[in-house]
Image 1 (cartoon, helix red, strand yellow):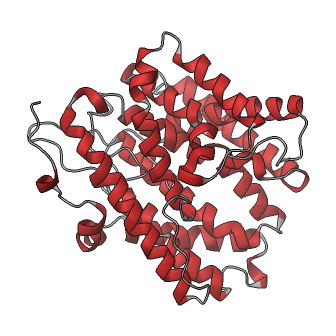
Image 2 (image 1 turned 90 degrees about the vertical axis):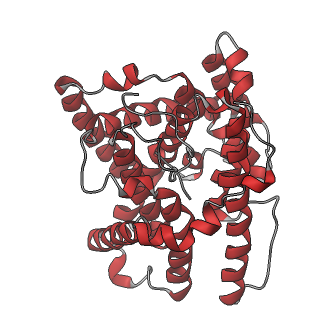
Length: 355
């Protein structure tokens, strides 16, 4: 499933785990968030690929470590890049161009892939296919932006809704479960400013961040064999997770804090300068929407569940393969090949904008 992603960033066209249209001439693009998005999209691909080997302790520990924060951080980036989304009526067209159209294309594409693999034809636009939930959830989050802007204290309200959602069995239709389950992270992104991100660019913070992530890795290694993974999907209600309401609330709040602390640590450690993968980070939409096909085929063919993969060397092999796949799917050639599907130009569909 995926996601990611100022001085740091000028308003961009797409705030999904994705790509953006070129900026106007004269505006220099900052590479920092592109670097972040590429790192996160590699984690998304790796997380999906590790599923067949979760019976192994090493694989389960890495999976738990990654899933606590990687989608929350993508949602934070989406909120951050959506801060000025409604400042121009022209941007509303992007709800169709870069969310709804790719959503429908991916739904049909995955139905075709499943059919080719022998699962039969199954297409439900209301129930997002696998990783396609993110596009629908982002559409709903963006539609909710005017509400958050009107509120005096949006974050406490978002956290309260997030906790209360644990009492309800929310359907997966239109990604409502993930819409509420990850809501605080989107609101936090809306509230962030470049100054907040600049606070992380300090040597002392970077040292603390290394310690935080090392500590989180140790905790994940220790607890992974003993805990259920359901809570880290940020979607299930307390009853579904077989938790009492007080345990469920504690787990939700604990995950919220853990995800924010780990996200801040990752943001502090990723380089802010131009790197070899900065350009790749501008095209992560293609990796997010396309990686499911090779991963799904690899799962169905048993390539990701060979006996030797159930251990540390298997985790490294899967991670290396996912890194290579992420690079290929973020190349400009990949964008050129699929741009008509995922970034269609539909100017003919809209009335002229007044601003």
